[in-house]
Amino acid sequence: MIPRFELGAGYSISRLIKGGWHLAGDHGAIEPRQAIADMARFVEAGITTFDCADIYTGVEQLIGDFRRSFPSLAPQVQIHTKFVPDLADLGAVDRSYVERVIDRSLQRLRVERLDMVQFHWWDLNIARYVETALELERLRQAGKIGRLAVTNFDTPHLSQIVAAGVPVAAHQLQYSLVDDRPNIHMVEFCRAHGIELLCYGTVLGGFLSERWLGVPEPRGTPPNRSLVKYKLIIDDFGGWDLFQELLQVLAAAAAKHGTDIATVGMRAMLDRPQVAAAIVGATNTSHLQSHLQVGSIQLDAEDLGAIAAVTDYRRGPREDIYIIERDRTGRHGQIMKYHLSGSAKT
Image (cartoon, rainbow, N blue to C red; front, side, top):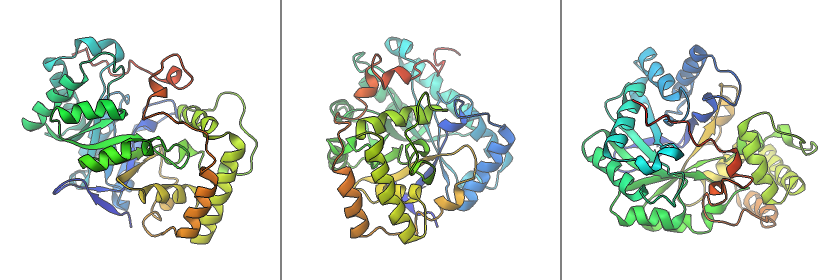
C-alpha cells in the first residue's frame, strides 16, 4: 500500500520515510524497546526506509538495535543517515575526521555499508564543504557508503558540489504546501542534474491536521521543537488566518477522499516534480494506518485548484533553501542546535 521509488538503478525506497529526529529528544520521552518494536511495525506496513543522523542523539544506535532485534526485517530496510560536523569543528574537518564519523555511524547502525549519507554544512562561509563532499565520495568509492546526498544546501552551493564531480543522488529539504522555497530555484536545478528530493516538514510537525482546524492561534512557546520550527513558517506563509483557510480546503479534500488532512498534504507533495519521498516524523505508530492511505488516494484538478487558490496568497518565505535558517541571529536560526555530533571525539 506504500508506493515505492527507484532512487537510482537497483535502489528502491518507500515513498514515505520514517523520520528519526522525533526519537532524539525534544519531543517527549522515548522508551527504547517500544521505539524498536514500532520500527518493526513500520517495516511490516511497507515503510521500509528510515531517516536518521549522527546528530540525532541515540537514533543511529536505536536503529542498529532494531536490526539486531529483528534480523528477518533488517534486510528489508534502507537507512539514510547524515554527516553533520558540529559548527565549531568545520575548520578542522579533514580526511581522518570524515572517516572517523562515518565509521562511527557504521558501528552504531550495525551495517557494513551506509545505504545513503546526507551531507550538511552549518556555515557556508567556511569554505571546506566541497573538499568534505569529495572526502565522502572517496569513502563511497571505497565501499563504505552506497549513495551520497545533501541536506539543506541552497542552489549556488549545491551547484559547486555537483560541479566538483560529486554524484549527488538526493537532496533532503523542507518542502510543503506552506513552504514552497524549493520552487524558487532548487526543483529546476535538481531536475537538470538528476537529483531527487526527499521532503521533510510536509505536515508541519503536526500543524497540518484536524487538531488545529478551527482553533485559535496558539500563544506562547509551542510544546516541542517541531511545532516551534513550523509555527515560524506559518507566520511567514501569511499567518494563522491564511493557514486556517488552507486547513479548511484540505479538510474538504480529505472528506471527499475518505482520508485526513495530513494524508492530503503528503499526497499533494508526492505529486510534485522531482519529489521522491516524504519524511514522516513519528514517536509512535498512532498515525500509521492513516499513512497507509497515501498510495491509494488521487487528488484531482478540483482539489489542486482549491489548494492553489489559498497558497497563491502566501507572503513567504521567499528566499532560497535554508537561507533564513542560516542566520544564527534570526528567528529561524536561533532555534537550531549546532553542536550535537560530538564528531571531534573518538
